[in-house]
Length: 100
Image (cartoon, rainbow, N blue to C red; front, side):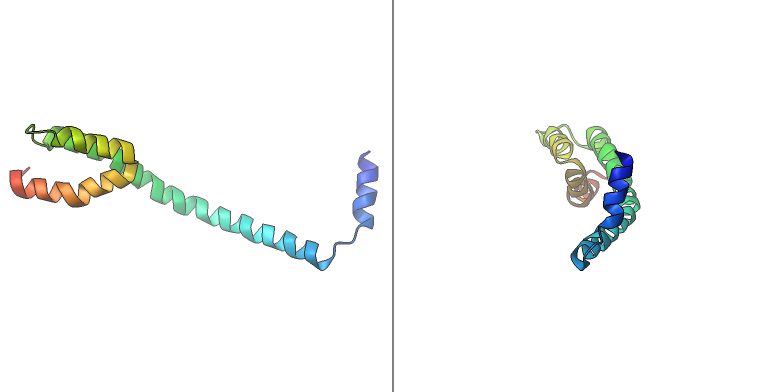
């Protein structure tokens, strides 16, 4: 069976469309290989931020009202986006108000 497949493949001559498709797959595969290190370099710090921000919020946020619980839930359920919002929006405000 293997010989038959080899003979069929040898006898087939790819047309221009098949060659273009093969080249485009190779180009996309190369792009994927370049994206993997880039996305890894982005994912690791964002995940570290997501782990750090709930701890910072839980230890440094005031106990008045529900702000601590609300911010922790926002950070947990929105992953790195919520952690980034907390870091850029609430943390400087908290540092200004409480000094910690």
